[in-house]
Image (tube, rainbow over the protein chains, first blue to last red):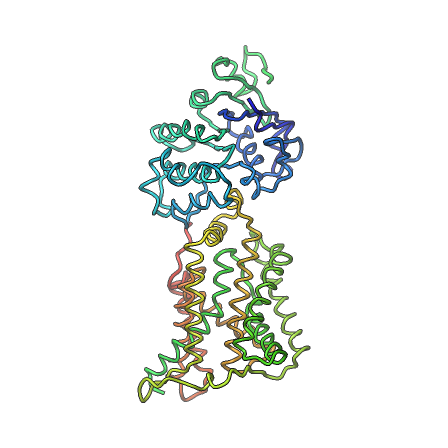
Length: 242
Length: 293
């Protein structure tokens, strides 16, 4: 499998506060990788750094063979990276349809159109004419995913996929995932719900206090190892290293 | 002058105020940028038309073909090189820098053109009018000014609503960080918005120069009328800007009718009073939306 994203020794933070300490991560083309970890572990910072919203202070990121850190945030979408941000962050004064169309601003070639997005996320269809600021949390998340797909990304970064959403809504959103992958998009998900992350991903990466504490395929990871990596050293469990 | 005629003249005057206010409304709506040099830029546009008409021996309206692109290019460059550096959560740097720019423009105009009042000669259109009834006549120039204001605002609203660039402008206005994630270069958007703002204020400046006389120090008065139109209409709303300009023009014209004993400036006072009333009872303006907590 071709390596799409190769993160090596990535450090990043907010001013004097460092949130990531030498993170290593590899995502292959066509994979779905879930990043898990407790609050403050650095999951969202990792995705925001990859999207260019947080400056990296060290390390390298190769995306499709190129140096991603040299590319400004507004050009990364043209390189094929799209972020579904935490909190959805739809453009409130635009309708749902206009939000989708803004997603295609970079005019990157690919299979995703409004019709195809509606095909994988049918719950958006009746919302198209509505202003984004009147949509529910689940509807906003669906539009935010659709907006990201409209940029025809090679890699979709999906931050806090199920945060604040009812389980039934989360299930409907995850039902779109096979259609997304079929469209040629690789997915890197930040997910706090561990069982959900294990269910949908090919590989899981756990962050603990800004460092990678565990990497593996869901089937190869046992509950104790995940617990230890998620919360840190646990009595009776060995300290885990990637 | 009858009340009906005063009302008609007020509406027509509102066209000029709306033109002054269009750039202010757009730059505030997209960038939350308050440009205190806006009035001085209108006067600068009028003086550029003076130089262009004299150098090329053309009508002031033909000089717009030179003045508007030059001002638009100046706006883009100023935004990218100067204004962008002042933008952020604190509005004070932008206010100070544009205040300083206004002072620089006033003094540069004084140095180059002297303090003498100037005017732009557009020929017979300045005095020709359409007689509607015995007491009401509509001047061609005020009518052209209002029509231009409406056309500019309709075109801008159409651009914002229906084009890719317009959606990028509105997305940047909502959330510049997320707009960047869509591949929108927010600094380029800001530059283009300022170019449009400068272009519209140059247009307004030339109409001002054709309508009457102007001097290097008249920018702040123009800024005041522009701000009043924007606030009355509602911050960031283009339709509101048009209505705000017309309402301000009506207040001034009808104020003159009320206070005919004094001088023509009494109408300006009524415009200011209306502005204060709107600010007190509907601070979001006639078409503005109240900010959510």
